[in-house]
Image (cartoon, rainbow, N blue to C red; front, top):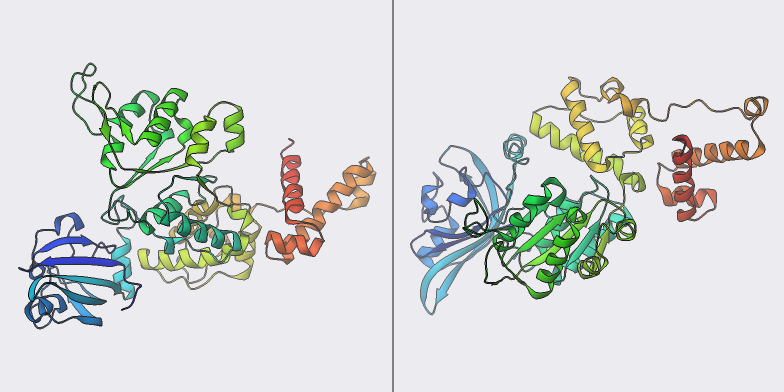
Length: 450
C-alpha cells in the first residue's frame, strides 16, 4: 500500500462515518467536525455500492488498493481521490470499513481549498501544518526537520528557539502530527498575548465560587488531555506561574483555580521563545529549572538571513500559492528583483517574505513581478554607494576605519557572489562561518551606531 496517504475515514457496518481525520477541508464541502454520524452516501452524489470503494467493501468484503476515483459532493464540486480501502472483519462478519487516501487537484480546486488556509482549524486535531509545509533546501533547516522527526517519536518536552517569523508554529505542529498523539488535540497559546491576571485561569480553568464571578470552566491543560500543549513566548509567564507549570509538567496533575481536588492529565508540553534563553535566565525572566525541564530536546531555528539559499525557493512557492488563491498568473521573478530579495536582511523572516509577496500580488497586474511593486523598505535596502578609500582618507578617517570599511566591502561582494549563502561566502573569504557571521553582526551594529 502507498504509505503517503494523509487522510483516514472509518465507516460502521451501516455506512455511517464513525471516525475521520481529514486534512482537506473541502473533501466533504461541510465542516469536518459535522461529518461524524452522517452516511457516506449523504455526502457524495455519485456514490453507491458499485461506484464507491468503501460501500463496495461493506457489501462484498473486498479490499481495493491504490485506486483512483472521482468524488462529486452534494454541492456539485468534484475532486480526484487516490487511496486504499479495507474491510474491518470480526471473524467472517463485515463490521466496518477503513479508508486511507489523499487528493489530486486542478488549479481551480486549489484556489477553492486555499480560501480556507487562513482559518484557525485545518485538521481535526486543531492543527494546520505538517512537516511537509516546511519548505527548504537549506542544510540547517533539513537538520531541523530531521531533529523534529526524531523528537516526534519520543514523548519528551521540546523547546524551540527562534525569532518571530522563523516557523516555530510549523515545527511544533509537525512534531504533534508525527507523534503518537496526532489524533488527539493540539492546543496552542501565546503567553505574551494574554494579560497576566487571565493567564492562570486560562491554563488551569476555574470552578464556580472559586472567586467573584468564577464559573466552572475548563482550562487549556484539560482541553489538551491526551494531546499536546504548545506555550509560545513562555517567558511571558510570571515566575510564580512558571513554578506552578513546572510542577504540572513533573506530576501531570493540576488543580483548577478555587478547587480543592487535583486532576490527572496526560499531556505533552512543547514551548518556545523568540528571545535569547541565556539572557532571559540571567535577567531572571525565565526560571532555569523550568527551562531545563522543557529543553529535553531543543530545536534552534535559523533566521532567513542565515538561509538565503531558501529565498528563491520560498518566493517561487508563495508565487504559486497566491496565483492559486488570488486567481492570478504571475509567472516568474526577474533576476534584478530576485537580487533585491537576496540582498535584503528579512528581519521578519519567512513571515515577512510571505507578506511581501502577497503585497506584490495586490499591486501587480502583470505576469512578471516589477521592482516598483516591492515595498519601499526592501527596494531601498542596501543602496549604498561604493566608498572610495581616498575619500575616506581625505575626510580624516584613521587606518582602522578605512580597513573596516574595505573589509565590509569585500564581505558584501563575497556574499553577493555566493547568493548570500553564509557557508559559501565564508569559504570564499577563507574564514569560518562563525567568524563571518560575527563580522556581519558587528557591521550591522556599526551602521546603527551601536
